[in-house]
Amino acid sequence: MTDATAQTPGEGSRHGGSLLAQDKLTKKRNAAETRFKAYGMIAIIIGLFFLVMLAVSILRSGIPAFTTYAVTLEMSVSEEEYAEAESQLLKTAAYTDLFTRNLEQALLERGMTEGVDQEAIERIVGKVGSDIREFYRSNEDQLGQPVEFQLSVSSRVEGYFAGRLTRDNISESRFITAADFDLVDQLEELGIISSIFDWNFITGADSGVDNPGGAGIGVSLVGSLVMMIVVLVLSLPIGVAASIYLEEFAPKNRFTDLIEVNISNLAAVPSIVFGILGLAVFIQFAHLPQSAPLVGGLVLTLMTLPTIIISTRASLKAVPPSIRDAALGVGASKMQSVFHHVLPLAMPGILTGTIIGLAQALGETAPLLLIGMVGFVAREYPNGLLDGFTEANSAMPAQIYTWASRSDAAFYEKAWGGIIILLLFLLTMNIIAIILRRRFERRW
Image (cartoon, rainbow, N blue to C red; front, side):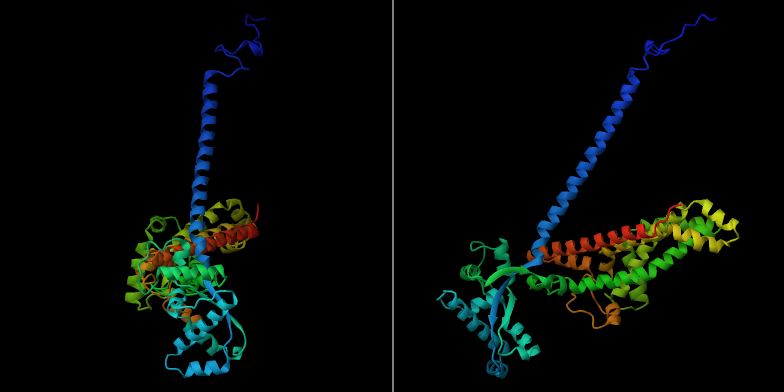
């Protein structure tokens, strides 16, 4: 028998509260949790908003780079006309005359009776004679047969279609006149001038500062691919080997601690410092060719190695110690336990870190600026595999930087279009990383 009476659940606790009702402290904690969830949702919404704005801005500014306006004309050049044009002193002018006559005939067939000024055609399309001559010199079997030519218009006509140039804001010059825009409108109405997909932007080369319409990113794309091959071949085995030694075999002392600290510090060094190092070591000391993808790949390898080493060590450290102990317990050597058990389990993280490092290297511009790849205008594809490594070339980020620094506004569209292609490459590399991670992932 006791004097204490039994307390029912609804009567409250020792502090006078009820177990079925929230006290002030519980309400305060629940309110704080609700506010934190709301803050998190707001942060996610803001991040998605800016991401969408960035994507829309890039697409809106870059998609015009994938289209161009061209004069589409079907013409036939006979063997007699070809021989006569080749016998002329000014051969390209003779082919331009042939183009003008065929264009006048096409306009007459479509109901336009006014004559065509050849000088106006040259201001609208450019020196078409060289393109036509080059085609027939390479395809003499097409003589006497109808051939459809698609010749890009000049950058000023592109600016007229894009709204950058109007009849009011142009100055009459030998490059374009207000009357030329009237002819352009008539040719567009008749279907002679139309918008087409610009394959040359993807497969072509840089055309210099005077011809933004003919500029392409294809050659610099090859330069980036060659550099990524160099980075992959060098950084993956060196980075993985260094990580395995530091994590599994190296003794823990002050020397290895110093190495680990320096690797972490190198990952935070600005990329332009690696460019200065590459300029001093690979070009000035080793005398490797300037602006070559091989040098660019070596510089980017130095920049990528700390990232790969850190991610690989983290992947090795994530493998449970019981895996190592079990392998050693059944008689495996230290090397066998690492290479037969630990390394396969860490492979997804290693591959992911490597591809992320490659993606980071693909978008770097500052190191390439120091070794001359920004100042070089890549106008031709390499002649062979070896030349692809040693001949001067550019890279996609360097090409984008070059276009963005030019004064002609038409190059801005090319720069935005190059950014779209660069982002597609980065997205592809990240997708490959995800696929490889799931392919090699093992559970324990």
